[in-house]
Image (tube, rainbow, N blue to C red; front, top):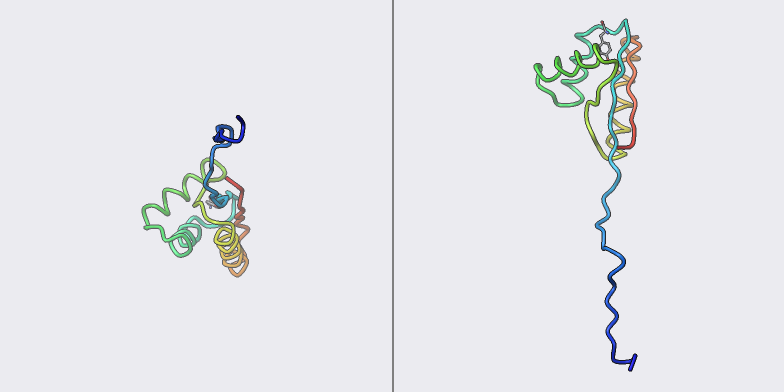
Length: 100
Ligand code: TYC
């Protein structure tokens, strides 16, 4: 009889919820000095000098590069901090974020 049957759920796989992560992208331009970009990467993204040069050159050669992957809130803060430093020095450096 049906009352004695145990219903096992074989359809839905339990999934752990992970918050979406966001890539922070740095964009190339013809005017921002290389040293300024290196400085930004060292100060705001905790990169070593060698790492910062590597990423800056990747942006310079390829047009853009991912500088880090963060939660929505942290990514938003990083973008704002980069844009604010660039604005203060009147450099056209652009930084954006994109869902992974
Ligand atoms: N292309 C710039 C120059 O030749 C350097 C640069 C690198 C600018 C990375 C922006 O995100 C950037 N001075």
